[in-house]
Image 1 (cartoon, rainbow, N blue to C red):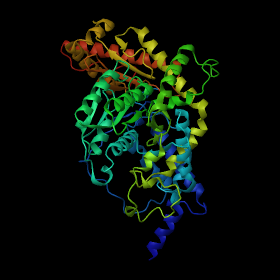
Image 2 (cartoon, helix red, strand yellow):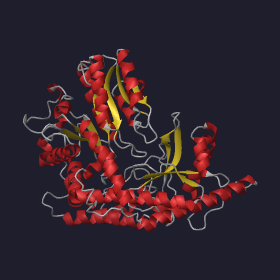
Image 3 (cartoon, helix red, strand yellow):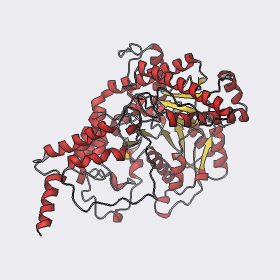
Image 4 (cartoon, rainbow, N blue to C red):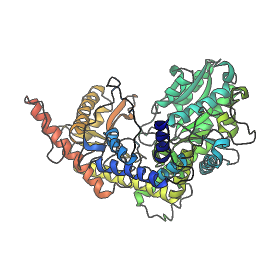
Length: 566
């Protein structure tokens, strides 16, 4: 009994926040200790720890829980760095892989505070006013997209995949209402395009439609959908007796920021309904989990340019903003705050033009007897896939959005575009066998294809677009260069964290083009740092080529770079 009481006393004093907040100082000290310990071990490079972290291994010796309670949480945080080794450092100016923003302090601070109270965001009975954050954000972005805020609705969910899952589900129940209770009873398809994210196929699979029933139209070089091919596919499916649950347009592709004209897509659907006398209208969804952020420019004075963006940056922002404003024609669109919203994982939202369509996803009342006793309360759990949702995420996202404001988002996105353009220009000036293959992309991503020093990059690139054999040889070269970067340029002050995409874009024949990828979002990456980054990439390319020359003469180890930590 004595040990039990001693442990309980320690738990109350050291491991949980007292209801009256008497140990708040200790809670703050443990948070500060975690941050200080992490920072003191993070290293100078773009990956945490500046060391090769062993990959997670399911076959490793099992971790065992300690027998005793930790008696000092500050000292306990000393074990944190080992768990972070190899993690990307999102705020490092040379960490430019994938669409990974650095989260705002407003989000991080608000999340910790709100998470203490453990509100479950499925019901206002538990989450209270925290759920107002979901309502307010849904109305905000519905309004910026041109929806009627009184009719629209939105729902936080577990990532971009889930925003597509919800949209496809709304479309499915539109063409097959019995699917809610009896399962899919009709031959149903979803139609998207080739550059669409693979999560579309994941969603149709998890819905039970089958991946073969996700059909892909061809795309243009800028990643927008070939509407003629889309129309052809849709007409063939309808003629074959299948129903189209959803047509998915791109609202800012991961590569090149391709954005469809949703007014044209909506018109295409109207013609299908009229020509075939369809008793339903296919749901039109915008997979806009990256492009949504440019809605913050909806009311920007491009003529006056009050923020003083450079002319070429201003022009690009205007073009993206003009395209993303056509979301008003879509029936729903997705938002990833953890991509271009500067929030941490996971913070995503589906916004629907008709809130009633979300409610139609609902469960039967006899399934939910433990919950939702207040019939008039806001209870999104009645129709959400999730039965557990963090209201802290909703609160923190709203606090972050309100802290940044329209101007903050505009500057962040404008800065990303500015730096992206500078990097493209610097790569072109270097003439070191590095070629930007998306010079006219609307996004802040930079795709670079590397060429051996004995080749003319521009001429070879043109040949590759119509010659699969030539493209494969250069792709193999780029794969090897990417591996070289990972081995020799991943750590230290001159380290780089870049990624490689399997499809920067598609050739006319529909074949993917592989390239190195730099995605610019970091507010700490300035013009000088961008130039240094390009210089390092060019230096790495020179050393890689020197290593290939040595390897050809019989050596197998390329020379390690002098200015980077090998």
